[in-house]
Every structure is written in C-alpha cells, then in structure tokens.
Length: 444
Image 1: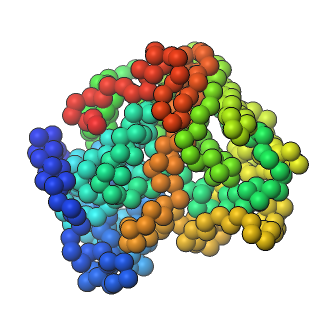
Image 2: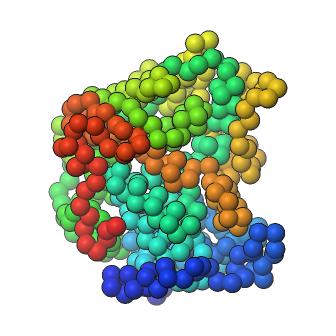
C-alpha cells in the first residue's frame, strides 16, 4: 500500500493561498446548484482519522456512497495499521481510496469537496482551520476545540471562506433531545432555574509504564501535531489521550460537549453567554493522566438566571451512566445520556404543543432515535444553507463551558466570563490561558 507521508509547510501554504484567491474551489458539476441537478451530484469526501469514531464515520460515508450521495476518495491516519484497515473496508465495498499519513495531501486535492475529521481533540482546531482555508467543508468530532483561541479561529475560518462546519455532538439530531426541547421550550415545567448533570468519574492510571519507542506503525510526530514534543508512552494513546488535561480534558470536555449542547438547545441559550464558573476536583496521585477522577463544576448565568451543575459522579437521577435533570418552577424533567440513544421521558414525548407554540427544527431523520447528523451536514453543503444542528459557532459556545470548567479547576478560583468579548473579566493570568503555543509546523 503506497502511502503519501509528508507535505512541506511552504508547499501547503502556497496551495492554500492559491485556493483562497479563487471564489470557489469545488469543481464545476461535482455539486448540484440549488434547484439544478449537476452532472455528478455526489459530494467527494476525505476522511482524516479513521480509528475509533473515525472508523464509524467512514462506514457512514460509505453508506452515503451506497445511497448515491457521496464519493469516498481518501483516508488519512498517523497509524498505518488503522490506515490499512480503512483502505480494506473501502475496498470490500468496491471503493478505491488513496491512503495518506499527512492530512495536508488531502487538503491539496481540488477534487475533494469536504473532509470528516475524527482525530484526537488537540488536532480539531488546526485541521478544521486548514481545511476551511483550502475550501473544504468540514465535519469535525466534538469537542470542537481544546482552547478558546482555537474555537474563535475555527469560526472565523468557516465564515470567511463560507464553509459548512458541523461538529459531532449528535444529540441535537436525536429524537430524545427534540422531544425534550419541544416540551421545555413550551413550558412543561415552567421557567427552568437549574440543570444538574451526573456522569461517572475519570479513570486513574493504576499501572503506569515507562516511556519507550513508539510502535513502528505509528507516526508519533504526526500524532502529537500541535502538542509540545514529548517521548512516546503507551498511556498517551490511542483513546487514552482523553484523560490528559492538555489533550483530552476528561469527561467534561468529552461527554460535556454532548450534554451541554443539548441543554443549551433546550433552554434557547445558544447565544454569547456570560457566566461565572467555579470548580473543585480530586487530583490523581499516580500515572500520566491528570484529569480529576471526581469533579464538581457550577456555572451561574444571569438574564435569565439559572444554574448549571456538572458532577462526576454526582447524583444519579436516571437509570443510565450519565444524563441531566431540568428543574423548573413547575416540576422537573429528565433527559438521559446526551439527547440521543436513550428515549426521552414519556411526558416529553406525549407533550402537545399549544397553538402558536414553539416547534424545534426537525432534522432529516433516520429510524429509531432519529440521528442523521452527518446527513444534515451534507444537505447544508448541497443547499448552501447553514443547516447543521451543531454549527461551529454553536459548538464553540458549548466547548467554552467545558474549557472554562477545566480552567477553573486548574486555577482553583472562580472565573467570570464575558461571552460577548470572549474574555475572562479581571483575571489577566487566566486570559493568557485561553490559548497556548502550538508546535511548528502544526499550528494555526
């Protein structure tokens, strides 16, 4: 299997500049114009990161290929074993794809319309910005960013280059969140004053191991990307990057990105929110993983006044591992998980919208729990309408909650966030931590 491994930064930036000088980089006829079928109505996709969630996204891309909606043209991963498995998956479906170890080769291809990014969190911001700069639409896994600075850069890149960016917080495309949103927005429990989230704890590295040489199939430099250089350790990856504050941010930045997204939708709170946040947690005493196993975070909002509490483990109000309870002036309503995969409460499902009441946007649904999150993104590309349920700006508001929750824990003090100015009020030290240096050449 021939793999394209590396492209120089100067070469990449030269290509990006050339593409940006053109008003449109999608080849004529690849996408249909609104109301007018094209010669080839398929959207051509490149998949960046094809292990874990990326593997599932690749299968969805192939499913859309079978439905006649997409072409899958390229796959990329820093792990050659995962890359080979992705190529085989495509081949088994009769699809020939080009494998790459360096995502920038995919961005240079003018025949690729859009990319699906499922790399570790520390890559999301850089790869999304680079993709938008080279004219690609983006579906990127949650959380959208590791820092506030990255999130703002992602919004700017999407808007400046008129790209559709959907973030993979699928709860908003699920029927459980839809039913709950519809009921709460129409007053089933009156004005909501508090939302309690519970979630199981972050794990502790109980069996630390020494640094060692990376596996021969892993491009460790590419995996690290924007992160500072450090020796390889088996506890860093693949999925265990989640348990380091620097790269993954723990449960609050992982599942919190899901849960908070659905909560903000239910409360019509997607705008530039201002709030205070304070957090406590227990620091692990061994191993590389530094996310606190136990953690309690409290957010206080004004105009309207309400409180959001994240607790791990917290008080388990439902039957499943995590979820949230909305408390209103006239009762409470439970939503388990993040708004997908677990049914909404019967009173929410059976709720009747009053005449003239609010009806949430209903996504292009699949069966069962209704998630067609990627389909909504593809639809937004073909119609040029900003349809994604979790557009990058919405996702940035959610990630801000997650990021500042961790920052309040690390600093050990209350933070006051100005959602309009995107700054922490009266704390210059904390403001300097809203961004961080990124390693050359993998930076914004």
